Image 1: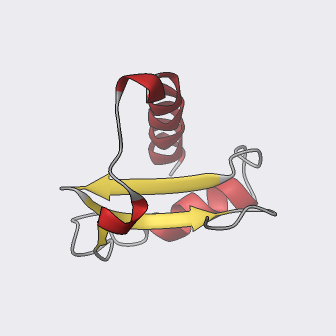
Image 2: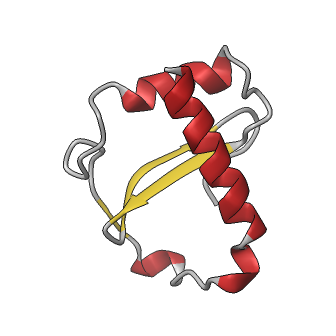
Length: 83
């Protein structure tokens, strides 16, 4: 579990650094799929939640995973909510 969470944290940091270099489509244009249909490992959402709620990533406020142009997972933590 720590390896997956570490990888996601690194991806999040890299994505944040490069935000100016990419342009996301408007929110209304994003389609959604389930984590399973996107090919994410079974139990990954629960592992991410545990790493953020109970683990070393308590300051992480949101996790969004996009696969093949579709939002496969979108979770917000603490006082943060979906815009």
